[in-house]
Amino acid sequence: MGGGGGTSPITILALSKAPKYVQDVIKHIKSIKYFDPPKGFKGGRIFRNREGTLPKGKTYYEFDVHPMKPGVSRGAERLVVDHEKSVFYYTRDHYSTFVKIE
Image (cartoon, rainbow, N blue to C red; front, side, top):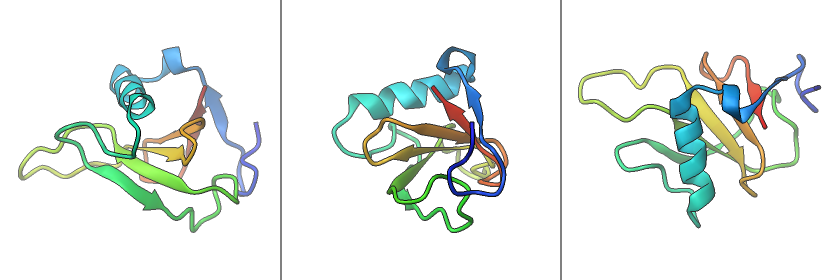
């Protein structure tokens, strides 16, 4: 249950318990070859893990979990995935805390 590099443990959440919109983005990411976000979403950029909250030694990519809306903030929720698309982390508070989705 530890974060493997951060200062606080990362809680584990079953995929089936994650919000449906997060499940949908995970399904999309697993189904594509590259790190392109779903149509209308922003994402696929490298997440640098500067705070060291996530385990070190991996390359991560970040994705929005809600589609872009003109004139509306992107919000704080994000999904971060490792380069192998095997580990997913969800944050509700713009990278302050994470839950690992399994």
